[in-house]
Image (cartoon, rainbow, N blue to C red; front, side, top):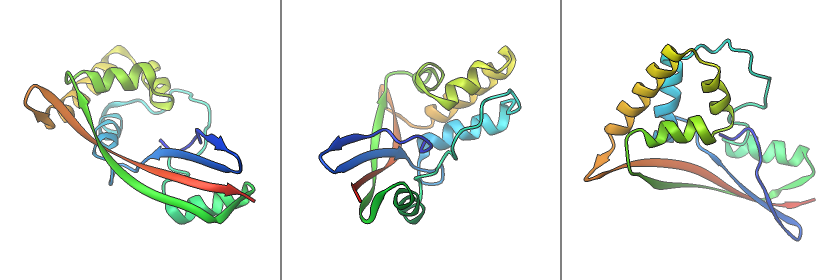
Length: 148
């Protein structure tokens, strides 16, 4: 999601990307819908930054400006790419094993809830079948900004 800011510095510029909100990101929507339907959200995860802190152009500009960056230099573009998955289970496994917040949430679910989430994610992925693979559209915001 967008709560953390991975970055790569080149002189006085920083770039990062964050996933788009579920309403603009079909892949994220599959996972969010499954979690909202089946997960126990009261599992004691530590507080983190807002999921979509950098998910809106002007809010991103504001937060970066407050953090010592030149908001007027910001470039903010949304890109949609297709993630080609070999199996319907691949997406769930990636979220469970390599996600950050989502992995933490999934690790704290009962076996029954985890199975219900897995089934829901796989059903969502199956709707994206194309030939012998599953193609999930994923939206991300690519941000480049200069230091003040």
